[in-house]
Amino acid sequence: MQIAIYSTQPYDRRFLDEALAHHPAHADVTLRYYDVALTADTVPLAQDCQAVCVFVNDILDAPVLDALHGLGVRAVLLRCAGFNNLDVQAAGRLGMFAARVPAYAPEAVAEHTLALVQTLNRHTHRAYNRVREGNFALDGLLGVTLHGKTVGIVGLGQIGLATARIFHGLGCRVLGHDPAPDPHFATLGKVVALPALLAASDIVTLHCPLLESTRHMINQASLARMKPGAMLVNTSRGGLIETAAVIDALKSRHLGALAIDVYEQESALFFRDRLGDILDDDVFQLLLTFPNVLVTGHQGFFTVEAMREIAATTWHNLDCYLRGAPCANRISC
Ligand code: NAD
Image (tube, rainbow, N blue to C red):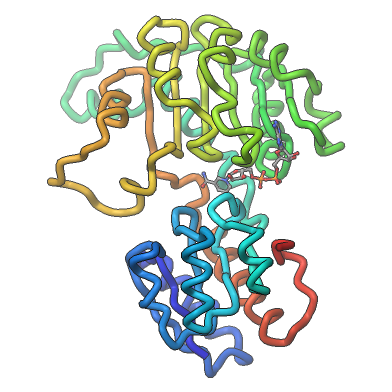
């Protein structure tokens, strides 16, 4: 069996190879690694493959799925939790097996959320450079103590809950919003409606999936509800935020700071070295000019533990597909 694995970097190959070596049942599986993303143009790379393995920015819309199916591809293995890039109906119509990695160290993303908050709050990125240049002045590095601050968590699933544990442990007052909150949240904070969360929080952090109902949930109206000077953090999916509205809120000084690990148009930018390239995305370039904006390139998940879990679960999902066994990670299409 051959599998076309799209959007891979050397670290993906390392962890997928290592995990496959521990799976004797897959001795006859050949992995065909590609660094390019899956798009309509790159579908032919899956010629002679029975499965494709993809990541967050690969395109799995109806035309791509139709074309893959035409080549004989019957299984889609997502190396991520979110599947907003998959046309579930089209996959169902074609009878394709699609499975994801629903949880691979939610703490990794929650810990990265804290890293972003504290970098922006305590200016450690600036302090690092200053000290290296022999500048020990503290002017411009003033932060706030997180203890006692209110943190609003939008989306109380696995990552939201892990984030709630962290901020609760720091002595913050934790508010949460979720149509179906995890019951464990009750010991960490209080569930409130979204407008109340936005109005009361010093830090608002997004941990809900990107759905049609959540696209641009942070827009001009929701930003206006936020406390003046509050910090907005997004480690979930870029489409949750209407970027133009956030830029307006930063310019008006209403929004105090922005930390994002994800960006609406990230597929054209992230996961590769663009040093020396001219970046055509004016909105992204503008974001980078604000001193109170911090951007990381979708690295929230990127820990050794999470990479091992992604690889192991991906091969487990393949195993279920090959054996025709029930798969808890299967996306119902
Ligand atoms: P999860 O499914 O465990 O939790 C998501 C929660 O969001 C659920 O409890 C759901 O009820 C809630 N939700 C749905 N609609 C909502 C709404 N309108 N308002 C508030 N809450 C809503 O998912 P998770 O594992 O916690 O992951 C959350 C998101 O994090 C994923 O969808 C993915 O997009 C993102 N993610 C990012 C990275 C990264 O590297 N930055 C890594 C993994 C996941």
